[in-house]
Length: 214
Image 1 (cartoon, rainbow, N blue to C red):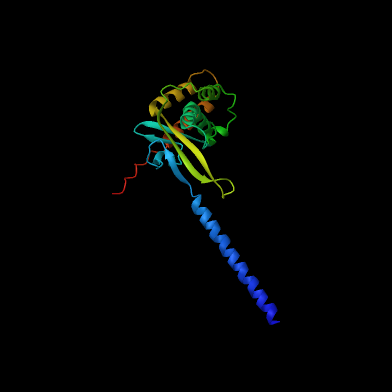
Image 2: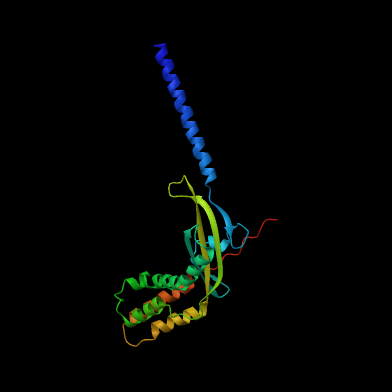
């Protein structure tokens, strides 16, 4: 009986050691694959605050700033990534504005899809016929991070661009699109103008940049 107990004790001890080794291995692996910037366009290895911002659009000094980001394989070229992001950015901004305005509760409660005002605004935003929008800032970074399994490290490329447009210019063009066609339901037209106004007023102001520690 003593021998059996001793054998059980050895098995439990080995199991504990194995578990500890497994945990230590996972801990070591996690440290190794911790996400980190290994190269970037600013040569600082630090991601700028605006590229970390969870808000897609912010107001800064009378301008609306739309932030578009995309991630590619680490083998992709930074200049190609930036070029793709620049090409897509204005269209993505217009899509974001369209979804924000047309999916608001004020508009959805009405059968507005075929109304001339809605059709005009939707066409304006879908076709990207906006003037005054321009890419002002670009950024890219290569990172080393975990793959989907969480075990193996892989390299990724992220690039981000800022699109800027004057707030009053955007507001005027959206109003013109809503009011620029005759006919339709006056209630729907007013609901669209209210939704457009709420969108313009609802864009958060940019937070001050954090000061670097001395």
